[in-house]
Length: 450
Image 1 (tube, rainbow, N blue to C red):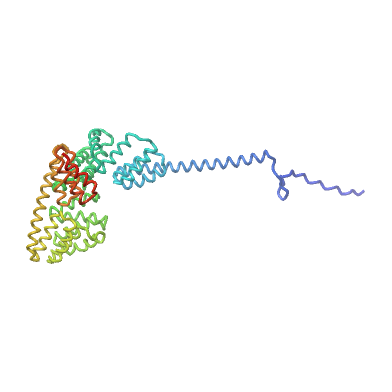
Image 2 (image 1 turned 90 degrees about the horizontal axis):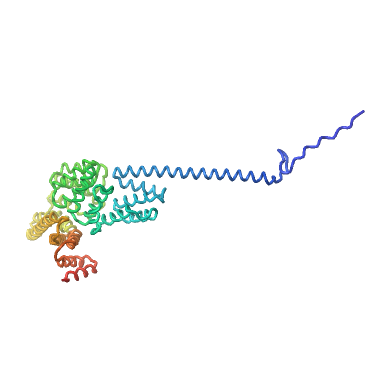
């Protein structure tokens, strides 16, 4: 008997929302399973964000550590410019670290960037408060700019050789005294610094500047030579030593120093002018001309260039041409006796004897003033109580055209014992011509005070 075909087995019921492959009609998941999936996704995202943040913090920490090491290395090598670059990066990575801002302030001050140093010091105190080191740094900031008085006296009395910052204090004092033309105090600070740190080139270099300024050329050469021995690539020391050698009529060794500077900086104006002077002294005036041209391309009115062009003209037996250059040089620096003497020679070469005789008397007066000024400055020291040497030196300095030095010397006189009315009168006369009028009026009133 034939069987009826059986009915096909119905497909299993697929719950709503769980349609398999090829099946449509997906519906919502049960609430419990939906919540678990969302929680897992959020947890995974949180973990990823945390890992990313930790990685970023770790990378910044590592970069900051690298920058700090580079800062220390640059400062140990006395490369303040490189240290400043790394400090800018460090405080960008660690803006809340007062140590970074403090070191940035100190480095900016040592580079002479005083406004920048002030800003960094403000940030340091905002991050870490006012401390003894920040107070000291503010004192050094004032002193280095030549704002002397009670501060430098306090520093000299309280910062002993065992203080951890004594070298930096002596550096700032030396800079401040140099800025104020207080040569004896500057020399004293440099001597103390050399005693504590004899392998540092700066106190040797600055001692050379002081000796040269006081007319002690041989001693200046010794100081400069020591600075070059310590740092053979130091540009300032080589140029200074070469300058002294030129003054001692030793053009060949001076030329060697200038050439070494120009090998590293081909457009250095002072080295170009210096090498040109050597060539003239060696009787090679034609070789001096292109060197002067290169230097004057940046500063056509530079005194050294004007005087050198006059000297070249004299070597070429052209006193009339030399006269024009020497006149411009004398106008640029009326207190330079050598330029005035060269002008006299050019006038005599043209038979202009009357004017030459008149200028010769002026040269003699100028040389006499400069000799006396040197004698007085060598007598001025921190222990001098009498104001008279400072007063006389200041008046002479103003007369020979050294205005800044003259004003500094007159103010130095006011700090010492004596009748200050003449000093106030001299300052009143200076400020009456140079301004501001308020200072002229003030000193005029003080000059008349009993």
